[in-house]
Image (cartoon, rainbow over all chains, first blue to last red; front, side):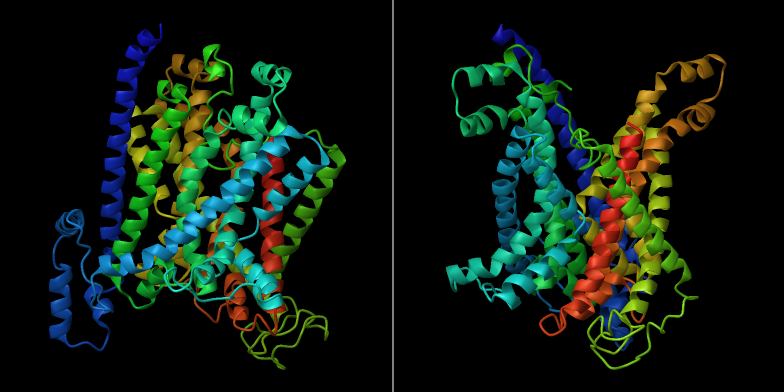
Length: 326
Length: 295
């Protein structure tokens, strides 16, 4: 019976995988084309924008030649994409350094913030959502609901500033700005990362807690929960072992999407706390008209998101094989 | 694992968008209390909208001119009961004019994003070929975080109203498209649509006359929630200093200006932040109640 089912299911999931890969390729195509098109939106001559108004004609011509602004869009896109595939994102004009090096320098900060924020989110949202579902309708459930629906209306940078006011300026427990690298000092690094990661996480907690709660309420109505209860399983074990997995489909999807939101949110939060991550690199690139650096960064951020979501899609099939049947 | 044998367990419903259909089921709360919240939210939004509309007529100080003394705390003087900023400009007047900018950009972008998203979503629901294209296109738009999209457009098109509205509309479009696509597919099989088909109506006529009214109802309810997120996005970009350029006052820009004196004059951050928070919260409350009105 089981083997019979699997032989029917296998081609279906293979087709699903093929569809997802085709979608992934299409998305990457559109995103790279879109980022190449960005340069055409620059009013006037992009070469002048990069080199500066005061640059001589020879310099402007050299910039135009270097970036291929004299070529048609499709050719420029093809050359840029071809070099991206070989791991070359070109050279940043304002710093004269390879874009990949700049990204590699800044990436650890953003990754650390994102990972910590994700960790905080899961550590808080999962117990909170399960407990709210378990005590559905109680004062605790209503308090959690009121808290998350208020929190969802606060922009992350406002959360960051309020946290700075309370825990950096007010109590002096954490630094208000600046970064300590992990190899300089581990406690210093964690203390510098704590408030920014918490600001990012609070937004996600507000999004994920009510969704997990709703799914867990539905799961708790199942007969097997009553059976597990009858067998004498404790509350914590019941919630984490029997309720969490069947209730985690929407939450897992959202956590995949959260990665993109966290990356986007990190841009603003890095600005609040003055941290040397990808976000502040992007803002520097925009302020100094460094179009190639900006193009590379946008494409890179999009790539991370697309790949993460692809992985989440595959994980969902693993969590609940019925997804593959859709 | 036991649940899989008898097919029990929750239905594998995937929310298309956070907050789209993943909401917690309506709670058995006393009806009166919820209505009070909706009334308060409505009253606040009415206040913000009328202040924004009347900002140029009301007896407010010029938002770009110093009225001194600088950094006077709130509740100290009348009529400037919200104090003055670092450059001695009236916080009250800047908030009122900032509301104009926030609402104008938010509403325009929501309307444009809604129009484009509904058209795309409905088309993709009835044309399987365009479904793949739409899916890839919305996925690509969703693949770029909203702030990055806005920053990239602002950086290339130059700071100002047009790139902001365009970027926010693009940011809002995918979720409208998904909602419209889902509703169109549900409505498509209903008897009145089939009747129109039997009577020989063209596909375009069926879409506009028979399906569009049913699609618009959830879309309009959802647009309030979208407006809230667009107001936040606009404030974030202005906070980063890449939105509508100064001296035009914006709520995000005011928070950004106040950050440098956060330790001496925290109200310069807290007052605009609170106004932004209450406005977004009110939009969220209204959006949720209007969505509960049309299941």
